[in-house]
Length: 287
Image (tube, rainbow, N blue to C red):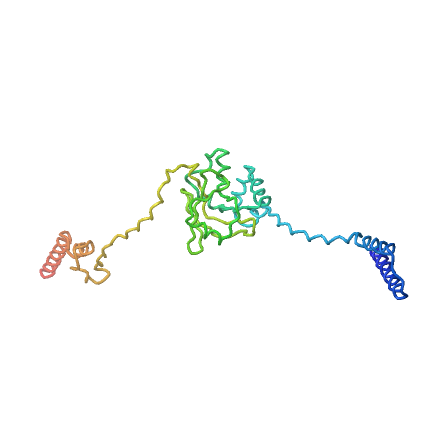
């Protein structure tokens, strides 16, 4: 390609030089020479130009494997088991990696399921269990700062669709989530890189569309345990040498009083001893 351009330019240069030489000797150029020059010029302009360099390809977004991420990121084995048993893990993978909107996923810890006593998830149908899992996902990527704009803006649709909505409140950077049955908060960020956001929550999100609107009131705080007042017991005579007498009418004082009063049998035994002494003394005098 460069060789053809070089040859064409050389021919043009020679033609121009020849024309200048003829003009210097007083000769005139004819129409044939002008036509040849124009033909060479047009041929030079019709030569193909080198192609422009192709633009660099845009970097493809990183593929996020939700199964691997939930397996190693935290204690999420129960929620991951539900996603795999309902075949919803593929649905969430598609939303995360093959859409422009991305995904936001709220993952309860294993203890959130073990602490769930009522209502129980064991009585749910397969369709209800699927809706429960999709209730934990939003069909859009939201960073933590984005929730500030969602605070108080009304119900936000989830991947479950229909009336399966969540309410968000931003309290000085702490994100609270309400579903009617559940009030919890975002405790930590597991993964937050567009287009996938995964946040840990402390409770299972329970939708009213499954469990109804008859929401039980929160359990009252336990009442303080009253400590009974115990009256002090008076010391016995053996402990203080008899000084505990008269300190009160308690059990100790009565016991001390009874123990200090000689019984009737004790008095009779004493008189018998005295009589025996007198009799023995008389016998001695007589002898």
